[in-house]
Image 1: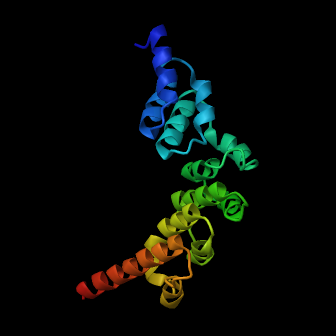
Image 2: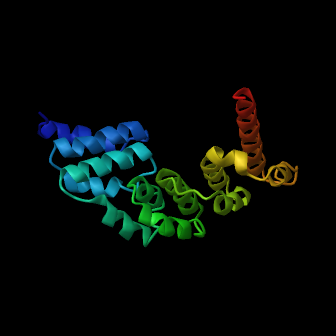
Image 3: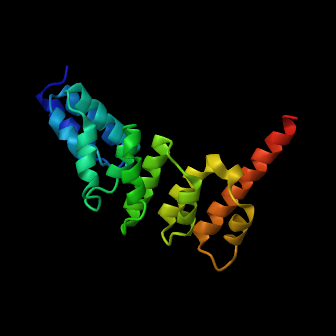
Length: 192
């Protein structure tokens, strides 16, 4: 059983840099009866912290989905809310996330792509242009989202992204996707 002294421990855990440690603090909110404070961790940069916040709120009878919707209405204030919205698993939220992939703030774009991945709502034709985003975090998010669809991507467009005048993140993403295509072809041939 958690006591009064444990509240200080929870506060210390919540202030940690590590997402794993913060997630323990968020879970501790439930044990110390501070459920309502979990809402402020719904848009944490760490996926495990967001998941723990959703769990704590649900244990208190609070649905996190409407909270995410309101946060995504002001995405600049809560960039990671886009990822959390996708992690809630509500497929009807895909349109909101698609709109956020064009947001001027790079963190919002990257988290929106992560949210689409979580929803399994990635459309390669709409994510592929993000491989040319000027911000590496967005390019990395797009690459992760496209890896399962690599076999269907246009090989010549990917090769064009290997040009020395392209940003390093775009070149790295193109190489990863080309390697994934090659691996898919090799596996396809070995299954014959």
